[in-house]
Image (tube, rainbow, N blue to C red; front, side, top):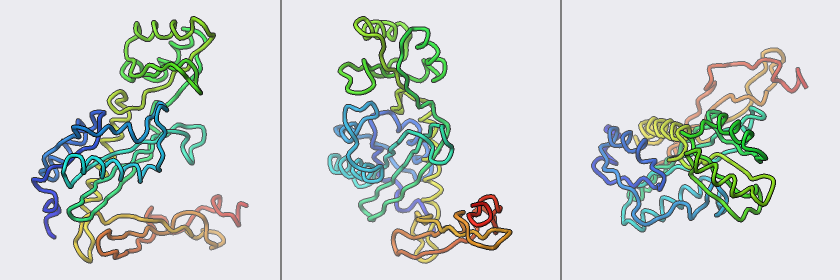
Length: 284
């Protein structure tokens, strides 16, 4: 398969979203693969989980992505889908910093192909705060880039009974704030992380879309099928001082989703040894 676009050319690509992600993903895939973009006419992606907590996500991100694609494809009678799923919380290694963990999946039922990519980014306004005064609210709004980025207001953080989402103007927010606090001393305000209300997240969605294109365009050297990429990493980079293995990555293992051919690429970060400060023997 010399032409990487052959599998997808002139097919209908269903971008599974109700939050306008097609605005950033559509042009990328139209240009690269000459597909025709569609969005679901029936499927509500919020039925698999919401950021604001009305519906809990029951599956992990990968299985949620797969469910999004399969449900939407079945409902629309199509066989090629693209979906993203974002998670927000503390960065796994940069402590006390919020992160956007964005996954994207291309699902091709016709060719039994599933290609996934990921971007873990510190570029996010993800935040939430219990608000006791309007001055405190204004400080929070300045920090999270309001009004270009919307907020959600709940009457309390946990076990809330009232909620307003997608708020992007100060007058509306004032009315909601004073309504929620007329019988209590505080309310809870958080960032609205839905893509169409959060330009920073939309930027990361575009980034992960471009990264997925790079992976699709990397073909297996054995069968020439697209999507040849890293499936796992091996630790064990040797310490430069004591030559003992460290926890740092020494190799990436690439695998073809079609023929399962594997390739080991050593020293993916162009380091052949690790600094002793990261060695459990030299620096226990």
